[in-house]
Image (cartoon, rainbow, N blue to C red; front, side, top):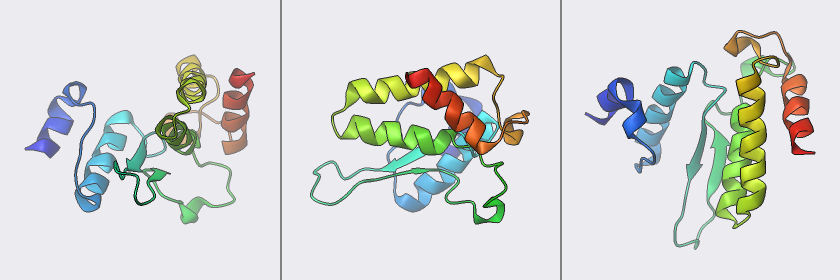
Length: 132
């Protein structure tokens, strides 16, 4: 039922807690709903902080497109923002999130998966420029 809700009413979901296996499946669905697996970030959180938590782009390392400069860096950057928030750096996390949102909303610097022609480095540079 949750997978169906992801598709039919995604706006009703904020945080979903599940095993790594089901989280991976559901985060891929979320990426498809966003239009690209290059957009969503994911976190495996250890709330007790006894073990490391992990922050990553949903798409993984994408070795099939390595070196082609077509990978969308947004999910990787967003995962970094999630890590900053987890580490208590809320202001820094918010700045990164706002920079990503500004670049994607502007629509001028988008990678091919989002219908643009920008390279990975172009998008990264655009996000970094919004931080200064």
